[in-house]
Length: 171
Image 1 (cartoon, rainbow, N blue to C red):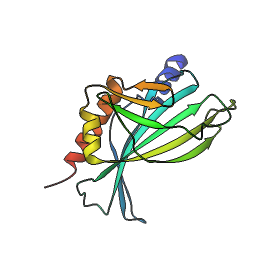
Image 2: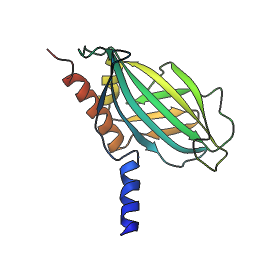
Image 3: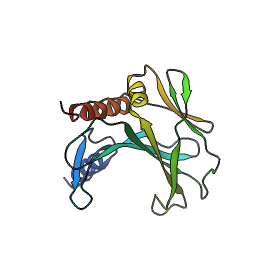
Image 4: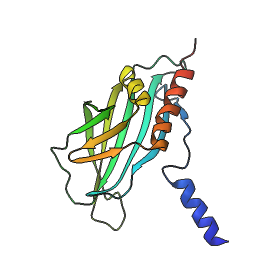
C-alpha cells in the first residue's frame, strides 16, 4: 500500500502530471498570471540531466487583454559544474531555425546530492510566432549541438495554453 502511494505521489509531481492552465491574481501587484507547466521535454541525454519548460503570460488587474507575448521558460539541468556561456538556442519550426532573445540565470544545485548546475532561460515570444510554434508540423529545440524534439505531450501543452489564452481574451 505504501509503495502504491509513493508511486502515485511521484506521478502527480512529475512534469507530465497535468496539462492545466493555472490563473493567479496578485492583489499587491494588481497582476494576473496564467501559467502551464513544468512540462518535461527531455530526460537524461548527452550532457543534460533534464529539460523542462513552462509557459506563462501576465496582465494587469483582472481584465484580460489579448496577449502580445508569451513567456517560454526553459530549464535545462546540466550534468556539469559549469554552464556553456556561448550556448545558442533556436527553435526549429517546420525545418526553419528561429532565434528569440532570452534572459538567462543560473540555478545552483538543482538536483540534491549532485554537483550539477541548471539554468533558466526565458524567451519572450511574440504571439504570432507562438501561434506558428503551436501549429508547426515538426517542432524541436536546438541547444548547441543537441536537438530536442517536442513529443505529443509537449505539443499538446502548447495547444492547451494557446487555447486558454485565446479563451480568456474576452469579447
